[in-house]
Image (cartoon, rainbow over all chains, first blue to last red; front, side, top):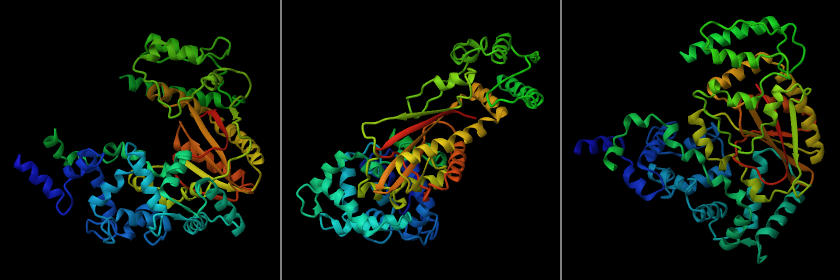
Length: 213
Length: 264
């Protein structure tokens, strides 16, 4: 049994133990291993250091390592839990856990609230939404007049900001999302359910399953 | 063994159709000559089924329901699983019926709201590529997108009418590939590939005079869907304002209609 452990240890040297990660998330050990394959390919794309930096993240999302995107930056910052400027394997798995189809609704609502609360004040302010909206319109090359943008914001805040204080708090956001469930569609990645079939190379490496069974 | 005789049958039919091709004028599946020789190693039940399928007389030709029930067909047949459970067999029956060129069935589902629903700011923001982490997986898996979008400044009803008008000739053009249609039917027998394409088109209102049109496929071949989408947007050039290529799972509410078609 000692020799199984050393094989696993060798493969995951420098990274968190997959068994530990599996116990803390909705992923099974083999799913964590499959995620490691994905992590490996992303983290080695620019600098082969076993960590995902901003450029590698951008490369993976947009096929362009120089492409700056407000939302991708927010996601990156949220994945970079330890504030190191890079995402390690543990961060990667734990953050992706929220995107699993079986993850709790509450966790997903919480994640989106923190995502949109860009300055981390505990509220989603109108100005923040305006900034995000403008970024989105820029990205999709849609040109809308300032007036139209204000109309969209007015309507959104009418629906979401129940106490009309010009910002959306956690509770208002929760209610708003429950009324508009499509807002959480970005928080579920069905690919995570079939991860072991999409990254079959792990099958040849995996020893861990034997131990866990 | 089963596999090899299918391949032989396919080769045989190809040559048959090549001969018949010049005299085929309609875009529906038609066999004018009923003479054909089954290769001797076909089983009796296979020969019987094929004879009934290739019957030039639509009145006596086997119906799809009967094909499904045929014992030879059912040997090792696995019913295909469609992503969208609401599959009606009417369009499948249409391939065997000679009821005119009903190749395109446009079903407009009138929902309670006749006008498109306005997207709120967060729904718009959600469409950003930066928030689509599925892209991390797709690059590795080499997936083809299942959904595409474009924006338009024309009124919603006009968009819908124009799409219907633009789609019809494309269906006709694609359905004229008789050889591939028939081959596909055979492939369906062999591999249980879905015969039906269901494309859902949604028109969503972004702002007072700006609409986003989303096309999503739920069933059928992804590459064919993309071919169709490409052709469609080319013929819709006058109403398309901007094309957006993104991959998303679902759309929001709006005026929806789906184009169902039997397809190669």
